[in-house]
Every structure is written in structure tokens, then in C-alpha cells.
Image (cartoon, rainbow, N blue to C red; front, side, top):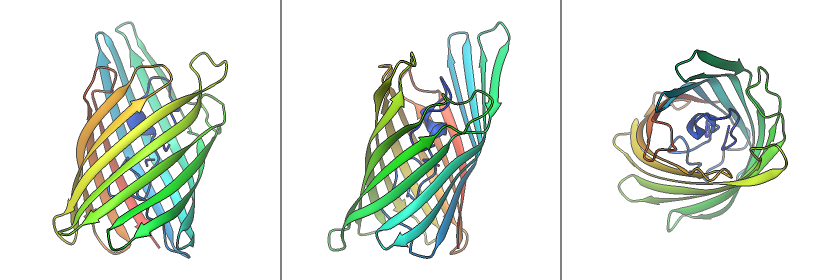
Length: 256
């Protein structure tokens, strides 16, 4: 939830909390897999939290009910609608706390799985998305933005999975004078431990137009409760000074 997928809504907020949920074996890295025709998948990051301290400055960001609803159109195409029910960010430099909160923006997405080789276990997809500025409370930039993601994945014997994303976003620049490009790259590796437990590690690199590149690494656990219900928790930590110190996300998935 990710989720909204690679679109930054809060100035200074961690990219980790603003990634829309997406059908994946890791939380940020999208999977090329699509939802079956006639099925609906609801993915909700019920709670996401990020904390970043640099000197006396402390920024905390929380997202509630970051949700993506996906429906299958064909075996290789699904359509997706994403939104964040509530975003909160606080900034404290030791002279009093500043806070913004409100409803997030809406995302329109589509995923086309254009390649799948069952023999090698390799698959790839194309995922364009558009952000509509529906936010309230000053949590967004009030501009239409968009981008495209290229997810690839390969499965191996023994329940191993490897995946990666390359993403380009067209976003409003920092001085609000035009548009610029943000680049994001992610990768994950995971393994089925049992029929109900999948463990993974993930790495994320984010290069915004501001030039302050962020890098993260972490791990998570995906637990299948029933055929329709599953839960996923991931912890990510910044590995350079520009990145947030750490982030937690708890996700629930329901397919019907």
C-alpha cells in the first residue's frame, strides 16, 4: 500500500509511507501478477508509521487505512483504485510542534502483465498510474501527478522468489514552477517457510528531483490465515542520512 504508489503527498514525509499497497510478495516492490477476472482484492495498510530525526528536527508521519482495491478484467489486466483515509505529519524543531492532517489523494492504476514464462518462472508487467489531488487539510500538493512502474519477478525451486521494480514518476517540483522526474528502484528476495508463512528482505532506492537520494533496507513476514485473508508486517530502516530513521507498516489483504 505500495501503495500512494510512489507518489509523495506530504512535504518531508517518508516515501515509505506513501506507497500504495499492491499485489506483491513484499510491501513496496510490486508483483507482475494480476488479480483473476471477476475477483476483487482489497489491500489495506491499516497503520503505517515513520520517524526521522536529524539534529534537533523530528518528523513523524502516520498513515491510516492506505487502501488499494483491485479487480481483474482479463487474465493479464487488472484495474486499481487507491486512497488514504487519513494522513498525519508532525514537525518539531524544539520550538513547538507543527502538525498537518487530512484525507489523502486518490490513485487510478492499471496493471498489464505482458510477459510470463512458466518454464523459467520469469514474469513482467507494466503499471501506469495517475494521482488525483483530492486531499484535505494541506497534506497534498493539489496537483495531478503520475508515473509508470515496470515490475519483474522470478520464482525458483524450493519456494524462493526474487523481484524488482523500476519506476519513473512525473511530480510537481519543489518550487511549484513545473514538473520534474523522480526515480525509484526496489528489489526483494523471499522464501516460503511453510504453507502459511513467507519471509522476505527488501531494499529501496529513491532519487527525487531535489537530489537528496534516500535508501532503505528491511524485512517482513507475510502470514496466510485463509484462502481469502492474509496479513503482512514490514520494518524498514534508512541506510543513509536522507532517509527516514525507520518505518513500520501493518497490512491486511482480503480477496473475494
